[in-house]
Image (cartoon, rainbow, N blue to C red):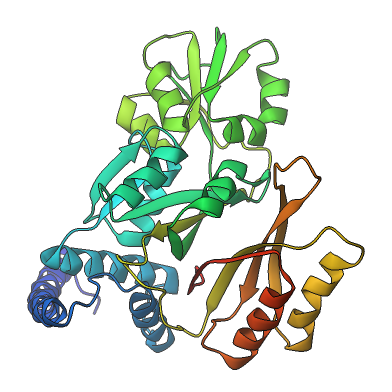
Amino acid sequence: MARTLPELRVLIDAVDQELLTLLSRRAALANEVGEVKKLDGSAVFRPDREAQVIQNLQQANQGALKNESVAVIWREIMSACRSLEAPQRVAYLGPKGTFSEEASVRFFGSSITHVPCANFDEVFHAATAGSAEFGVIPVENSTEGVVTRSLDLLLNSPLHIVGEISLLVRHHLLRTTASLDGIEVVLAHPQALAQCQQWLSTHLPNAERRAVSSNAEGARLAATNPAWAGIASERAGSEFGLHIASHAIQDEAFNRTRFVVVCLPSVLPAPEASGKDCTSLVVSVPNKPGAVHDMLVPLKRHGVSMTRFESRPARSGQWEYYFYIDLQGHPSQPPVAAALKDLSSLCAFYKVLGTYPLAD
């Protein structure tokens, strides 16, 4: 005989009590870990360790929960336990409601101290100067390619990359009413305007497209004028009390943005190998025939896969370029170490931007 709804609710309440007891035990153990870390000076946040915990749980998962749900739940559990030691101060492009804020919460969990910044330069400054321990910045989009300002800042910054997170980005048209009528100005970050240009040309061909510092800032401004609309997340719409005039207006259905987490090496050294890692570097080579080809030979020789290759002008006036490269693997692995050693010997400029666990 099937159980009744009241019976099921009683059982769920009992399981919730068990979960609370177990979570309290976990928090107490995390507190003990924190005391041990204080004694030996270890970092509070270990992205490699947390990635391994989630991977192990997903491999052991035989229940009704989906693996992505397991990751979300345990990231929040670990975030809450971490905050008992010391909540992480995380800088990102603000104001509240940006995709950068969402990426920060997805990576660290909700139990963080938010440090919203006006632009990417401020994010780097906050993490360098110590007003934040970590910064979260977008580096590439599946539609529009690399975020050039982020790459330029990584080149000369003392910060290094210790993690990454990829978000499925849904851009919504937000305004004070749910109608498309009477929209004179559309406000958003330049990347979002570019990602929605076909939709805007079709549905709002006469509206001015006005670039602002972030999508959430566009949503904030849209709340001040009924003739304005912003392109931003549903989270931003809720934050500023706006209606969704049109859902998911991005031109590419599976529009994704990749974010990286940066910090000073003194805050967190390079994470240890997790088994699924990426090593990012920026190099330049002498301007001579075959130099770029020669730069790639060590990767082939040692069997190291390259997953990204981008060029940026060196701004020297000599048509020289910096090359941003992502490699599969960790420098502790002999093939990767050998490839990096051979590659560095060929370069006029060589800098490892970071090594970190790959996003799920």
